[in-house]
Length: 272
View 1 (cartoon, rainbow, N blue to C red):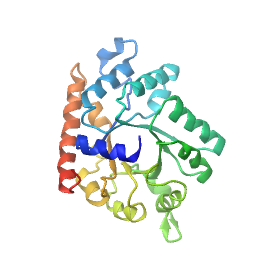
View 2 (cartoon, rainbow, N blue to C red):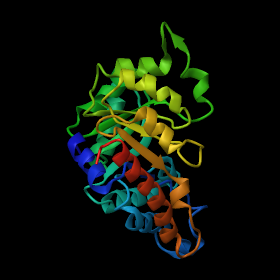
View 3 (tube, rainbow, N blue to C red):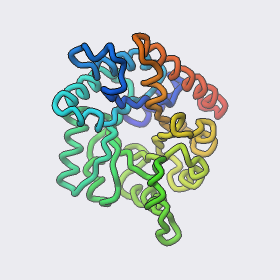
View 4 (cartoon, helix red, strand yellow):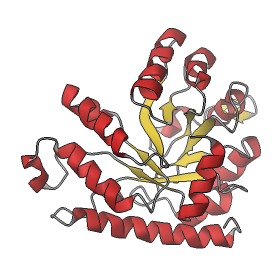
């Protein structure tokens, strides 16, 4: 999916919601466990219930790798089931020496046919650029994350810049706003102003709204750009909203609450 198509989806659905498909077999409704592929059935019902309310789905790959071959089969079926007009994110956090990254890119962009993949930048340019060689595919680079351990390295001063600012600045020599996004946690909304000075036109994938304490209105206040430029991820708050046979309806209710707030914000910022 290219940038124009993603922007059009945001305008059409009046949403910039990304639903995280972190399907944990220990948390999904118990009645699904009797089925042949409970993880896929769980994802399928979540997708059916929310596909008109969100513009992206983000499976966290660890939740599928943990179950070996069966997990990968569930992941492939999930990706095949997601509508073609919906952006897909492989939350895999890959990144290794060039020839290894090339194989990771082939696995997620060609074999599984994801639109994008999260990449860890620690090993530098040659670990990232193999992912940028695929047309209409995206790298989502880890920049400023929402976890507690982010303070260990990401705020380290490198000259006049913090390390996460250096990552954003340097990586724009490798890609552009049509194939490069950044992960920026919602729990630090005050940092979005500085990030937008460095990357005014790039999309930002924003975890941490809801369950981790981030506020949507604050993220938009400091992080929204002329094309919206935000994908707000919610996982647990949507997919585990219910535990009975009506779990998908409850997921839709929670996704709808976020989408309605997003529609108001998009109108407020004159984007729709």
